[in-house]
Length: 158
Image 1 (cartoon, rainbow, N blue to C red):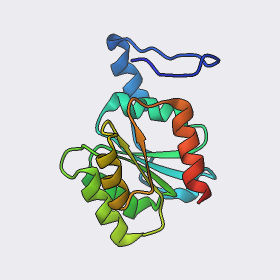
Image 2: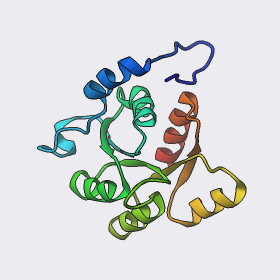
Image 3: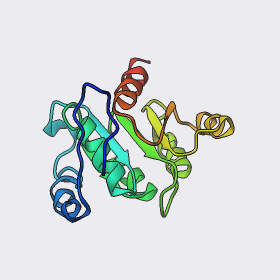
Image 4: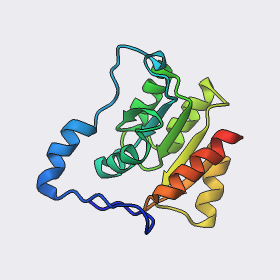
C-alpha cells in the first residue's frame, strides 16, 4: 500500500505480508464502552469497507480525531446513533447498505452532522447526486492527504 503525499511529506508503504500485522493493530473501532466523552478530540466516523482505504484515512486523521470505523452502511447508522460523531466520512459503495442509504437514515436523526462522501465516482452527474442526497461535500479517490485535511476543515467551518 502506498499513500499519496506532497513532495515534502514522507510516504508509508506496507507490504502484503506486513498488512495483516498492521491491520490487527490499527484497523479497529474505538472502545464501545464510552461515548465521545472519553477523549477531548472530536469524534469522526469513517464508513469504509476497504481496509486499505481505512488504514490510509486513519494514518491521516488519528492525530486530530477520535476515530470510529464502520465496515458497512448498517454499522455506520448504528455507530452514529451510539457515538454521535461530529463528522462522517462515508464511502458510497459498501455492503449491506450503501452510502446513500446510510446517509438517508442518518439524516432522519440529524440534519446538521457534516457527511462527506468518499467515492471513486466523481463525474458531474455523480457529484450532483451526492450533493442532492444529503451529503455536505465529497472526496474523490484515490485519497490525497492534503485534500482530505482541506475538505474536512472546509466542511467543519460551515
